[in-house]
Length: 583
Image 1: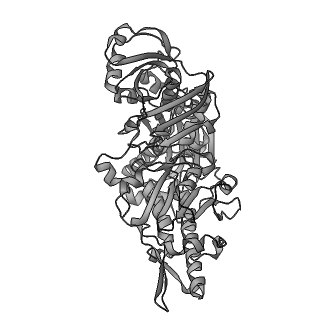
Image 2 (image 1 turned 90 degrees about the horizontal axis):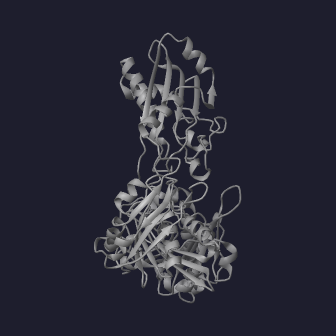
Image 3 (image 1 turned 60 degrees about the vertical axis):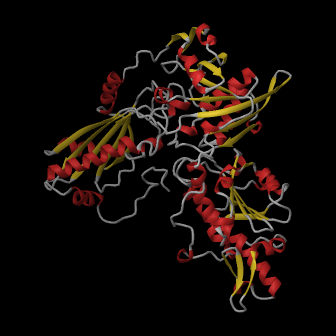
């Protein structure tokens, strides 16, 4: 039986995956093709072919029967490192106790590795099934050739190929060599298992990493270690856009175990995933670094956001949401209908900034190598939802190609979108470059709450014209909130289309006159996505307003909502100008 902590610890690159499997193994790689029908392509893999094919997935079967599956998404408590491989194993008819999961490093050629947006299963379910079914079909064909029978008369079952008519069977490991020499079947030639035969998909099972987590053997970002590493805690500007005016590290340097105090420069242009800047204390332990940071004497130059006051800002958002703004949807004539109505109702809803507050705070360890005074490479171990974003951000900060940045993905103590923003990884890389040794950066809980990429603060204004039965004939809603776009475009005050369609523009109610608008709002903090993103303030407002209308009409809220939704119908998302984020 394969030990669960072994499944958890293996981390590999695409080429490393191939070198890790034994000679004679059946190795397949899969990707979503460019065809309009969204077909899945599968090919046999070799170290040479892998560079040209650029697959999303690898699966191999060794001569001893061990099945190895490459996991290219991050595990942060959702079970994705278990869920996706089990889809492969189900179609392959593999014995789950003989499956090894290897964690991939960051590599853009693996397709998107951004474990965000609840899309891992939605986007990879089909290709995982096809990859597993392809491997099973090749094993079945190998057995059929050996027995001189029709392949259709053979069935893969729990790590063996059976021939029910004769009662013969062969273990997968016995068929691997012959199967590896066969032509890879096309996806339309496969026999996919019906849902009634699924053994693993949709079935409850402990996550692969559970035993390692419970026994303390699992490696999270906060546990990651490299030989000779220092531990760093950073004092960051109290205001976004601020910088160090001066600092005195005399007392911090006196603390036993403090090795270096290093200033980190402020970001330039839009924040994106750049460090906020500040002063890092690097020591023999995180605790010592933390204590040393508390002894720093720093004078800050706060910059343009010094006067930011959320109470004042809330009033500015309310003002913006209560006057005409940019039109995103205009069906019928909501303004006229509401203005002329004798029965009108309106309400306003606010949501404050929200912090992600993952159980494990942001953390990463980096080792930067130089030659002749120039950076040549960087290796990181990081609790990240998006290793490719780490490669891009660290590569840009160090001035090296992203391909020279190797990112080993640890387990994540939750993420919620925070850990797809790799500023903390860049901090570790910059400190390692300056100190010429590995540096592990850990954010304290206070750091995490004060310096987060906050979820947007929002104000939503909603109005309705009501019929005699209390249902709306006209509906107007306006929102004002600092946009995620401000993270990438310095000074951006306009709401992005994808934000407005999350709960505003995609209003599903059967109302003949609908108008949706947004107002401008300047960002004074780093604005980032958090689970469900703009559905948080928008759906809160829209659903609360519907409940209030039900109360006014004296109706049961559920009955009223069903009336609002109207008869079953297909919504024309294209005509509504929606990108259909939910697919």
